[in-house]
Each structure stands twice: as C-alpha cells, then as structure tokens.
Amino acid sequence: MTQEWEEKKKSWEDVKEDPFLTTKKEYVVCADTMGQDKEISKEDREYLEDFTKLLAKSWEDKEKELLSFDIDKQLEYLESLKAEPKDFVD
Image: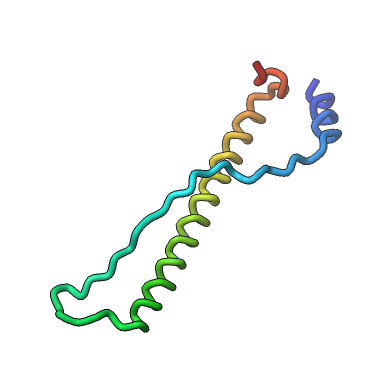
C-alpha cells in the first residue's frame, strides 16, 4: 500500500500555487512637528514617504511568508496522516 501510494504521488503533476486571496487595506501615516511652529520640509516628507513604502512592502512580504509557511505546515500534516486526497474532499 505504501509503495503504491508513493508511486501515485510521483505520477501527479506539481501544482503551482495560485496567488493568495487578499483584501486591500489602506493606512494613513501622519507627520507632526511636535509643537514646533514650522513646516515639514520637502526632504523630510520625501524621506517619510520612502520609509512608509519600505514599511508597507516589508509588512506585505512578511505576511506572505507567514501564510506560505502555514500552508506548508498544513500540507505536511495532511501528508503525515497517510490518507489519500479523496479522503479530504466532501
């Protein structure tokens, strides 16, 4: 049975993951001079904009990485049950 199962697994095509379903979220970043009565310079605004883009990209990358890790762990668990895929389909 185990050898038969392994042979079946080898005959399957590799499945390419579809992109994750996501919900777009938007956030607001504010800058404050902390009571100083002055305008925020153009250079500082550009720096904050670049930093915000970096933070958003880093956050998104980490969320994708963790979601992929969770999916891989779930697949490992299902494979450890030694059940055939049809056993998981309603």
